[in-house]
Image (tube, rainbow, N blue to C red):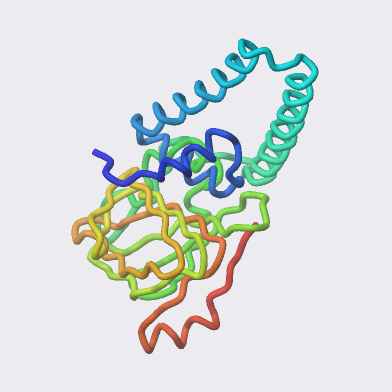
Length: 241
């Protein structure tokens, strides 16, 4: 059961098409797992439609409605074009299926499995992911999304591993894809969604029996808070694209 969800405001922005491509990717990934949030988004979209029905009943002029519809159509058209262009440029030539699997030799279990379709397409061939080790417990693989504002990555925390305590330089959205981890605020399992902002520090710790793989979307690098971690901060740069 999913216990951690996007805020109502964030879901409202998503339903209105007001979130960026990278943020939308994180929310859409959560929606893949969460029927509760899917229902909320559907209800919000219906409310938007009812607004226009009410405007007509209240006698708003045809000219005003036409002008409003034209502006909305233009915005939505631009958003759809930008979204499709960015995702199309991000998709590999040979996309993987939704059951992309990387074998974890140490624990004899999948490190990636049953990915949401949009993530599976971005990953492509899992064996070709370029994992970069940030610490003995943490690896990261950057994903190409065609946008230039946020870094979109997969992170893998080794089973039983702990990530050094860190703060956030900006917004960070995380969705658990496989496994689970915990921090001082709770336990996060498959489908759970986290939104961290500057001033919210934590130290994720993967469960002992499985690697934890997450999707992360960040608009600024993290900031390690410990003495050793602070020495690494100058080397942590955002890698959008």
